[in-house]
Length: 603
Ligand SMILES: Nc1ncnc2c1ncn2[C@@H]1O[C@H](COP(=O)(O)OP(=O)(O)OP(=O)(O)O)[C@@H](O)[C@H]1O
Ligand SMILES: [Mg+2]
Image 1 (cartoon, rainbow, N blue to C red):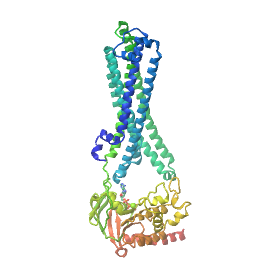
Image 2 (cartoon, rainbow, N blue to C red):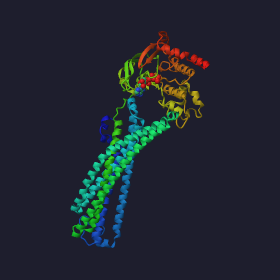
Image 3 (cartoon, rainbow, N blue to C red):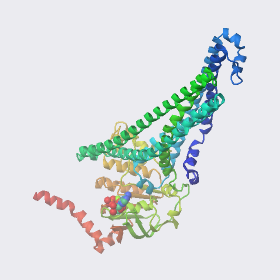
Image 4 (cartoon, protein in one colour):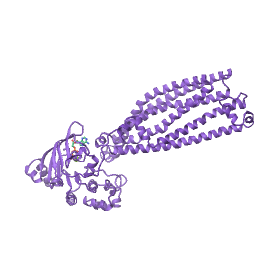
C-alpha cells in the first residue's frame, strides 16, 4: 500500500474497509429503519392508554394510528387489532435486526480477511533489518489479536456508536415532542454521563496499552519456549523457563484484575446515576400528570424513550474505552504497515563479476562486523572463504544476497550496484544456501521445491541427487512425500543441510553461495557433493564458505577472514607457501587425526 494511505489511523481504517464499507452501511441502514419502527411502539401504547381505553382527545402526534385502524369506537371493540399492530411492528424490528447482524457479520469477515492479507503480504516484503528488530511473538500478536480488536471495534463499537446516535436522536426528538420540560431534565443527565465516560476512557488508555505490551512479552516467551523446546529440555532449563513464564503470567493477570476492578467501579457508579435520573423523571412526570400537563399514556411512553436513551448512552463508556483499545491496536498495526517495503522486481538476468569495493557493515550495535572488504570474484570462478567463527563470513554472504545493504562501500555484480536493484531481483539470481537452513512442516519434496513451485518431481529428484540426499530420502517410509518437522520425521543436521542445498540448486541461479553448508556432513560426502557441483553447476559463479580447508582448497581464489577483515588471499598453494594463518589452519586440520590417534594410544 502507499505510505500516505496509512499515515493516519482513519486513513489506515479506510484502507482496510475497502470492499466491506458498503456492507457496513447496509447494516447501519437496517438498524436505522428498525429503530424508527421501535420508536412507534411507545406511541401505540400511549394512544391506547389515553384515547382507546381512556377518553382523551386524539392528538396530532399519534392520533393517526387510531384513525388508520378504524377510529376510536371501532378499536375499543377490537382491541386485538392493536395487539396485532404491536406484534407486526416487533416482527419487522426483528427482521431488521437480523439484517443488521447479517450485513455486519459479512462486513466484519471481509474486513478481517483484507487486514490479514494486507499485513502478511506487507510483512513478507519487509527487509531483514525490520525482521531482526521485531520479535516473532509480537508480530504474530499484531496479526491476530490486534486485527481482531480493530475489526471488533469497527463491526461492534463503531456500528453500535451509530446505533446509539440514531437511538438517542430518535428518542430525544420524541421526548421533546411530548413534554419539552421533562425532556430537558432527562437530557441534562446525558452530558454528565458522557463526560464521566470520557474521563474514564483517558484512565483506561494507559492501562490497555500496558496490558497489550505485557501480553506480547508473554506470548514471545511461550513461542520461544515451544520453538526451542529441544534446547530447553537438553539443558534441563524447564524449571527456569517455567518460572520465567509464570512470573510474567502473574504480572499480566494482575494488570487485568486491576482493569476489571476499575470497570466494576465505573459500572456500579453509572448504574446508580441512571437510577437516580429515572427516579427524577417518574417523580416529575407524575407531578405533570396530576397537574394535567402530561397524559398517563405519554408518561409511560416517555419512560420507554428515556430507557431507550439512557441505556445506550451508558454503553458509551464501554465504547469509548474500546475506542482507546482499538486505537492502540491500530497504532501497532500501522507501525507494521508504515514500515517501508523492499522494492520488488525480477525477471532480469544478472551477469558479470562480483566486486566488493571497500565494504564495511555494522548490525547497528556500534561495532563493525565487516571492515574494508574489497575483492573481485570473476564470473564463472569459485571463491572460498575460511576464517574463525564470528569472523564475518555469513555477514559477507548476506550482503551479497542483498539481505542487508552495506553501511559503506559498494557491492556490484557486472558493474551494477546491488543496493540500487530490487532485492528480490538480486535474490532470484543469487542462490544462497543458508548456514541454518530452516525446514518447514511440509513434505521433503515440498521443502526442496520451496522456491521453484513449478518444478517437476524429476527435477526435485535430480537436485537431491546432486546434493547426495536422494538415497536418504528413499530410505524414509514415504520417500519424497515424508512429512518433515513436528508431525513428521526429524532430519539429521547433515540431511537438513543437503535438503537446503538441493532447494537452492533447483532454482538454477547463475550465482551460488554455500554458507558453511557442508559442515555437518562427513568428508567423503563433502567431496562427493563438491564433485557433483563441479559437474552440474558448470559456469556458475560460486562462493563456498567453510571451516574446513579441504572444502575450499580447490577454489580459484581463497579469502581468509579474521575479525571482519580479509587477512590473507590467494590460491591454496600460494597461501600454503605464504605460511600465514591459512597454513596454520591447514596444518592443524591435517594433523588432527594423527594427534587424536596419539591421544587414544596414550589414553
Ligand atoms: N543478526 C546479527 N545481529 C547482530 N550481530 C550479529 C548478527 N549476526 C552476526 N552478528 C555478529 O557479527 C559478527 C560476524 O558474524 P558472522 O555470523 O558473519 O560470523 P561467521 O564468520 O559466519 O561465523 P561462523 O563461522 O560461526 O558462522 C559476529 O561478531 C556476530 O556476533
Ligand atoms: Mg556463519
